[in-house]
Length: 233
Image 1: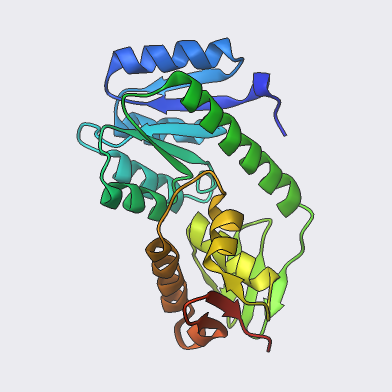
Image 2 (image 1 turned 135 degrees about the horizontal axis):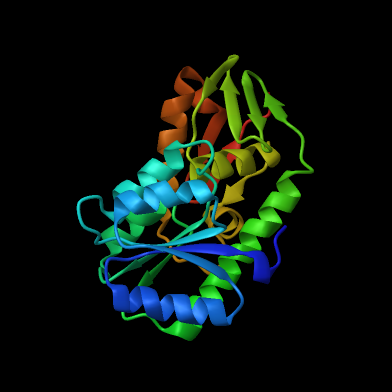
């Protein structure tokens, strides 16, 4: 795992003053920083394998939501953590950003101390996840097979693509087969205690997972008013 001095952060914002401010403060903390002023450049620069992307939503031509969709579609970049930076503060935008795979969401005007704290939290979580995941073995439940190292899921021997958060949620359920997991358990384990999301976000992710699982979607049971459970087969 890279040290702070080796961590690379990609800043994406069309306001150069904001980019310069964030770049200055992050470099002062010891991070390597690369920058982009538009969405298309951000997609290109994501191939440089940054440890984190700070991504504005309101970008010219290709907005932040489209950028994260493109990043999460590519095997080489799908696991890069993303923090959205935006002037939008409505709940629906926050939910959409998190559903698309963002790890956090910061509304402008940006507090530098808060930003630095969020950056450290996400990088710590990401680093820990990579270290833990690398020691885990593939889980098999009925026709379901989950490889946590390569982020691959096979259903009835056919590979099915799952975006990062859907994968992490599915894997968390599989790790706890037979156990009832409350929404609070899921929120803290998959999204982290420092990120606010609504219960509906979990339900939406579960629905999408079940859709991908097709006729095997009933592997995941809904425990009314409590949470979810992966069946023991």
